[in-house]
Length: 392
Image 1 (spheres, helix red, strand yellow):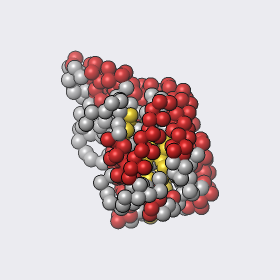
Image 2: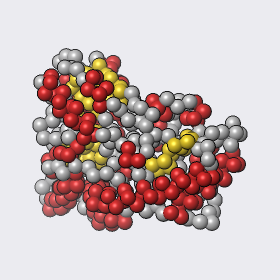
Image 3: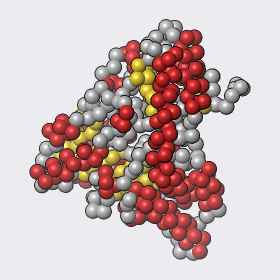
Image 4: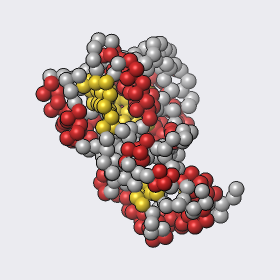
């Protein structure tokens, strides 16, 4: 297939390309072949690069370097946070955890699996914008509540949860019940668009993912607040404070650190720029397709690069394939759920009809998207809708 114009990538929530600086850092570090755990000069060079990256990640999120554990990405970070806290506690009594009905599958599935081992789990509902109620959260907390996991930005509909307000509720519950509730936040989608300072957010565990922030795939980090009790998922050489055994991939870690640092330095300008582009895109889509419906939150309660829309009579999956032929990359849901046949659990939680869910399309823009890109996407979507509507 040959396109007359450059392709437009509007699936940033699934994965992003490497930024130029992250690419240069990755290439620079590829020659460091020493094992960071050894004692010779080659190993020490790799160890220095590893710890420099750890310092960079810590500085970007306002943490201490010894609170950063490198992982293979968002899924591993989430599973380590969940099972690392809860499995030891389940051995000694009744344990209750709270999450939301629209979390990423790497949060929901491990928590649901632990129910077979005795975990009591509450999945909080969301409103039509995809937000939870802090009052309902407060009511759900019991003396047995040990773990709460709530995402920062939803990868599908872009809803931004009020993490600071949620943290206040949790702090008050700790005082009320005299217990130590661990608060985990999956912030994989957030660093390009939102300031991530762990003390300000009030979290104990925070998941980050390289491929969502113009960094490489296969690398991420879990912030672990000092004093938070966490057990490793598997045993081995004891790397990463004993929490993630295995030789560290220094080039990936270094490139990830650069990408995260750049994301946080530029997030305010990127947020303002991309919100304008996203708003123009929505205006252009509604101009051409007046019956299109925006799903999820509006304004500051939504990630600035996210549009999730339903177009009556248009099959979403067919539209994504047709858009790709027009030179536009889009999606229908989280990339981690594309191989399942059941409806998106996120859209089900919003209470959308089957037809509404089937016609849903997700557009998530990269920081460098332009006004021209927005108009091209809207034009392509309108042409696809005209061609394929009501064909199912």
